[in-house]
Length: 373
Ligand code: NAD
Image 1 (tube, rainbow, N blue to C red):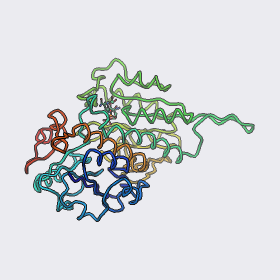
Image 2: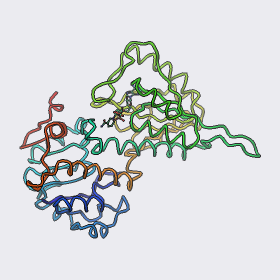
Image 3: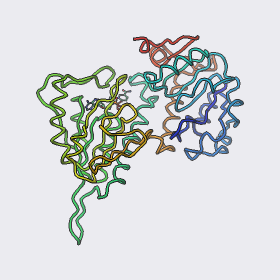
Image 4: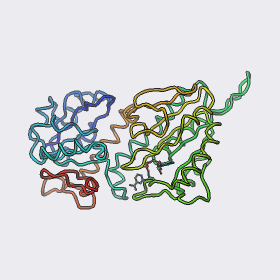
């Protein structure tokens, strides 16, 4: 069975979907690995590293010829996948709700699109969950980006020349990225507070030594949706949340927003009027910027400035830690393939629970029920 590993072509994408470590492990399962030349350079992996791990190196067309499985970080345009076996699996992040046209194109060329970003949140799939592995790094990096753009220090420092107060960091959205952002800001010595619509996060915030900022006693407080994801909150809740946040934000030096709702635009959490109350020199990082943004005025791929406050809207934060992000992404893919590897068939065979959740297209059709709702 031939597995092709592609060089990413999207702008700002430095990650790669396989590393020498996972090439070795997949080869040990019985697969032949073919890696596109230069695929690992952005993540600090030379072609020769892949070769030493047992992969064949080649140009895209050669690598794809006869491949039954294609691995990528971001799903490539199917028009660039000519030569793959009919019905080949393409395993990558598809962002299916936002890229419906591309999903349809996958069906049209007879490829089977497997969206790793739709991995169900069940215990046995945790090791295959690219959203978690990448969000964790994004949360960490968001704090470092904020710290380096901030013209002051994070920790309190008592020096002979006087005392520097600790920075105040507010994290909005306490999922995987938010938790790591809290932990990182705490490690840097900041005074940290955080908020979420899921009340279960309150204890997690406290256990990291941060202060929870929560709306109390309003209907619709429990924003827990399916699979541990957030749902939409009531109008009354949103108003109460906005008021609470408005008072709190004025006293913050750094705001990190991470709030996402699957299948919907990101909720708007910070308005321009609130930004105007912050001290000039403050920094906001909007990790949801590519999903529509939590922060008014955030621009994807840019650092905007409003009222003297910098709003960092970097795209693809995990790619800024490409080596670690690739190592974890590649392990997620290996864990997935290994868990379903059928020795007799000499290839992976998916079960219904995970297969039906992540499979977008098959035999020329779009087959995922979430896409026909
Ligand atoms: P996410 O990236 O979808 O969203 C980030 C956070 O934003 C979430 O905590 C969400 O509640 C919050 N949010 C949404 N709307 C908001 C609003 N209006 N105001 C404030 N916050 C808002 O979430 P995630 O990081 O994917 O994590 C969601 C949950 O899933 C977590 O509890 C996480 O631990 C859990 N999880 C489980 C598994 C598993 O069991 N396999 C894997 C990963 C994550």
